[in-house]
Amino acid sequence: MPLKGEDAIVRDVFLVGCYTCQRYSDYSVLTANNFTTTARGNKVVRLIQKKTNTPVVVPIMNDNLLRIAEHYDFNIPEVSDVILNRYIKGILRRLSEEVPSLRQTEITKLTMRERAMEERGDVKFMRNEDGDVIKYRYDLVTSHTARRSGITNLYLTGLFDIVQMMSISGHKDQRTFLEYIKLSSDEIADKIMEKLRQSENAGNEGLF
Image (cartoon, rainbow, N blue to C red; front, side):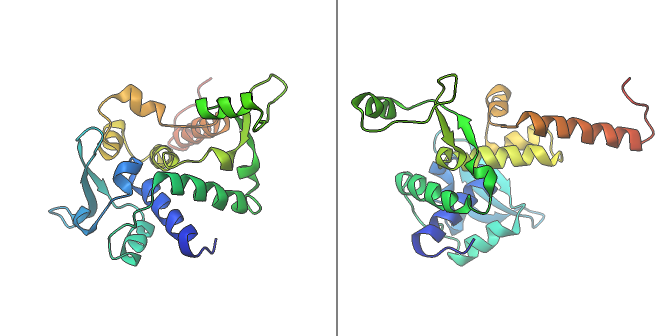
């Protein structure tokens, strides 16, 4: 999607969050000092998470991250979370014309501010037949979605165990980590069938 100016910067910063699986407070302030290598020469991002003071080493697993970093001389532009949240919604709303799934609705909860606005009659939110508030997917994306997306995508590869993934995300509690993995019922069914086919191809008998 061709973007210019602030739109392009917001997209790039958001993608850094997806590729590093970090919180906004960490992925939005990366500098050249954070981009380094291991003793074996593997490219990584090193940082100490601001919220928990946890040191993490994130392998650079996607060349897009390097391309973005190089574009900004390895100093990720500073964009406030308010600006990022506003712009990313607008970008994805436009993108929904080409990606219809972004226009699907999801059940959500109103923030205290949104609830107060609705009570004053300033705005009226969509609701389904059960009275649940629903929003378009593009309206639900925030700076924190990048971290959730990155962690979920790591899981979907099926390449890493939970210890490795928690090492990247910086989580110390497995229960909290698993809450970050957002899969639809279809995705879970697809993963089950994929594993079953792999098992059968390896010569194992079916489950039943």
